Image (cartoon, rainbow, N blue to C red; front, side):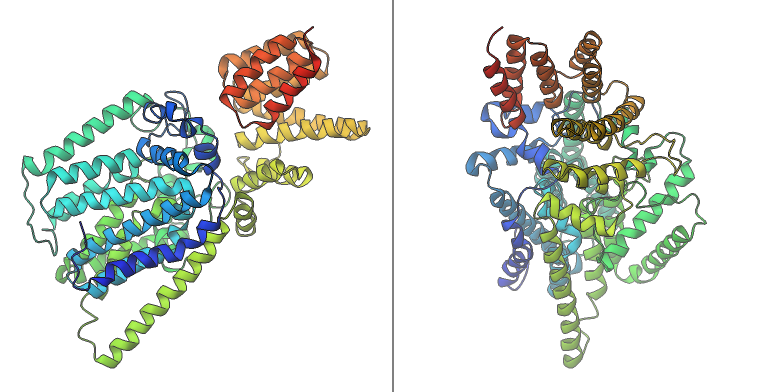
Length: 596
C-alpha cells in the first residue's frame, strides 16, 4: 500500500531519513537481551529446531513459566537472519533499520489520509522517523518485535480504512505473531469508525464483513497463545519481577497503582517533547511510586490531561483528526500503561514505539491548517523551525543509538543518569563480571541488592533474584581465586558474604535451582558431601537444562572422582550450550582425569 502523496520523491526521502538516522547501529554489536534471545538461543541457530520457535515461548521457558511471551514470527526472522549471515550483528541491525523505514512509510500513508495534506503528513512521518524515543526499539536487535508489530498493525489499520477487511485481518495476524502489542490497533479502528474515519475515502460500515475476519483472527490468536503458553495474559508468580515493576507488589493499594500509572502516561509526553534523559531501564528506586492523586507529579499529570481534553473538545470539533490522534495514542498506550493491570515493567521506551504514532499524528493535525494560510515569508520561517527541530531530534537519536553499541557502553552511560535504578546497577555488575572485572562487578551487584530492598532497612531481604544469583557466583569465584593466591583470610571473608547472598536468595525463592547448586557447593566446602549431593539432585529435578546447574553438578562429580558420570552430564551440557567455554574446560578436565 504505497502512500497516496503527490510528490513521488517524498516517501523515498522519508524512508531514507529513517535509515540514515539509525545507520550508525550497523557498526554496533549485540547488546543486553539480544544475547539470551538471539545469540544463545539454539532454536535460532538450528533450522531443525525452527519449529520450536512456534511451539515454545519467546524466552524458551517452560509452559506456564514467567516471561512466557509468544512472538514466533519475530523469532523466525532472527533465525532466517542467522541462517543467511551467521553471527554478524550488522545484518540484524540493517534489517531493523529497514523495518523502521517501512513503519515510517506506513505512518506517512496514514497521515496523508487522515490529515488530507501532504506537508503536515510529511512532518508527522519525519518526526516518527527521527525521534530518539524509538532508539531502543530500532538499535536493540530484539526491539524488532516492537517494530514488526507496529508495521503490521498500521498496515491493518490502513487496510480497514480503505475497505479491505481480509487484508486488515491478514496484517493483524502478522502483527500479533510479531508481538502482542499489535492488539490495541483494533480499538483504534473502532474509534476511527466512530469518528467517521476523518479524511477517509471509504465510509465506515458496521457489518459482519468488516469485522468478522478481525474477530476470527483475534480468537485464533488467543487459542494459539493459550495452547503454547498455558495462559492468555499474565502468568502467576510474577511477584519476583517487583524490581522491574514495583506495581506488582502484593497488597499494593489500587489508588497507588492508578496514580503512578497516570504519572507515567504523562511522562510519555514529557519524553516526546524533551527526550534529553533516555534510559534502557526504569526499575525500582529510580521511579518513585505515587501514593495518591494529591502527589504533585500526579496533579501536574491530571492538569496536562485536562488540557488535552479541552483541546479535543474545542479544536477537535473543527478538526476530527486531532481527536483521532489523541484517541489512537491513548488506546495504543493503555495496554502497557499498568493502568488496567500491572505488566512486567513499570515503564520502557520501547513500549512507546507504536503509541508514539498517535503523538506524531497529533503534531501533524495541529499543523494541518496553519501551514497554507501563512504568508510566504512566515511559511519559510515556520519551515525552518520545523527543520531545526527535526535536525536536533536526529542528532539526539544518533547519539543515543551509539549508546546501544554494546552492553557495557549502554549500562555505563545509564548508570550516570540512574544510579538508583537497581536493574541498571545489576546489569552493569553482570557485564563487568563477564569481562573479569570482579571487584568492580561486586560493588555494583551489592549496590543492586541494597537498592532492591523494600526499604532502607538493611535487615530487609534483597528482592533482585538475578543480582543475588550473580553475586553469590561471583563471590565463590573470587574466594577460589583468593585461596589459590594464598590469601585464606580474604577467601574466608568472601565465602561469608557468599553464604549471606545464598541465604537471601533461598529465602526469596526456596526452589531456585541455580542458587541451590551454590548452596551445595558451600556444603561440599564444609565436607558435607552427602547433603550436597541431595541438594544438587533437587536442583536437577527443578531444571536439568540450566547451564550453571549442569556445570556445577559436573564439577562436583569430578571432585568425587566420578568421571564417567561427569562426562555424561557434560555431554548433555555441550548439546544444550555448545558455545560454553566452561563446559569445554570441564570436559578437558574430565579427559585429563581419565577413567577411574
